[in-house]
Length: 155
Image (cartoon, rainbow, N blue to C red; front, side, top):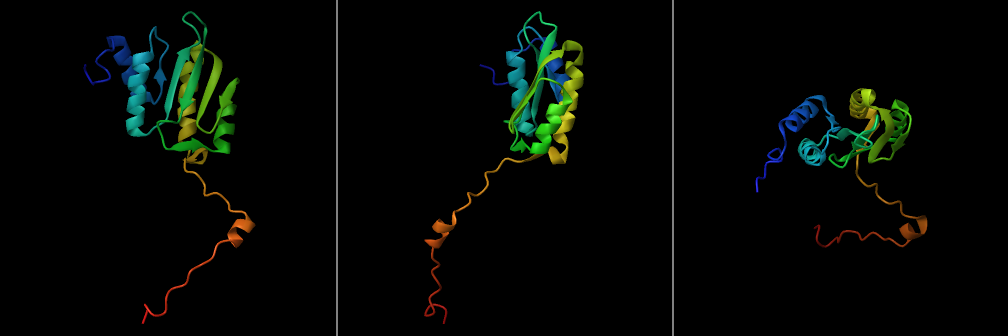
């Protein structure tokens, strides 16, 4: 088994993968995008950049969808970022960790994908994905006590 993710790709798929790496988003509107998408996701994971890709809704559809996944980064969208993503196009579904745009005409997939990548990279639209410390209720804080230093050990 060859560990190189591009070993099983055709020439056209390699070209699409190269173009995706150059532009920041992958156009996966080909016949079998699974292996190509896996190779691109692995590359995004290594670089810690968001995974942005577009695909057809069905093999012969005139419409496609654009996806933004942040599982390859250690960040999430802010409320401002989610509002900005929804403003990019109609039929947007967003959450702090991903976004999806449905029913996009094929001619607009690349334009929207590039706009999604640019919108995500603005500093106000994302923040580190760390859990906030839970707020302790006042009655739990009353049960805590502080142990002072021993005076015998400090002399």
